[in-house]
Length: 322
Image (cartoon, rainbow, N blue to C red; front, side, top):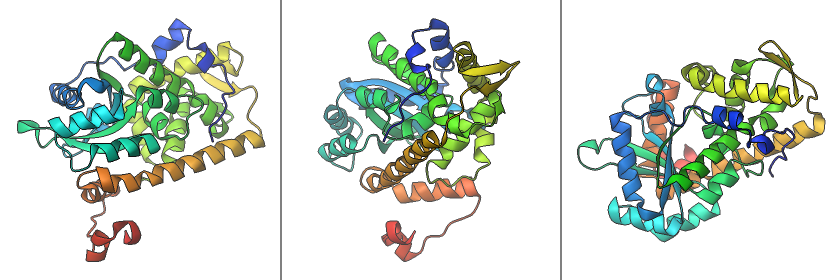
């Protein structure tokens, strides 16, 4: 189930000033390490690769740890061609046909790709999507929240095959950000500013998945991304006020037509469905993500601060006992 758009934001993406604001941060320059890894990934996925979007902790240096994986959305033309190229150029422990089938079944696939040579210690965690699936996942008809939850944050478009691919990915990210009001609206307080809006988006998105972080993580992420997120969503709120969806009181806003109980119910159903789909993707980790169990354990330890020692049965049957 997807949520129908109630606000004019998506339809108004032809407004040049709003489009520019929603794309803030996408064109920031790269550090040398990320640039090398992006170049390798573009080569590894071959001619089918269209674009790479960098997100996650390494996109926010103050929030990153050296051992953390580098997070990318890899946008491709055809799943089968992309996985065949990856198998040939980087090596994979799974069948390209199986990977392509799983990606079509429940996009995106999340896979690990290790860089060669001196950068071998760098691991890229890649969420693979066709441009069609990316556009759908960023639209009001998104089947779940996985992609939107990440692209609403501070991300960078680090590589694109050609101007057409570049423009299409910028459009998708802008649509994901413009659509935040439609699903975030039921959770907003009576009065809010841009920073409060960002906090509501992050807190709601984190609650839509089973994650090792606590509720305080949303505040940490807003603080780490404030320089990008606040201007993006301040422009969006101003746009909504100009279209008389919100009433401005300085830099504070009030919703002129808060959603009713039925709309709130639809939103809860959307997020419940999203959590089911997100959790189902864990089953694909077993097939596609190298050393997936150790990766999950390390992430939980890093976020919770609690060391984890797996028993023999937890290692043998993790999906049952862990």
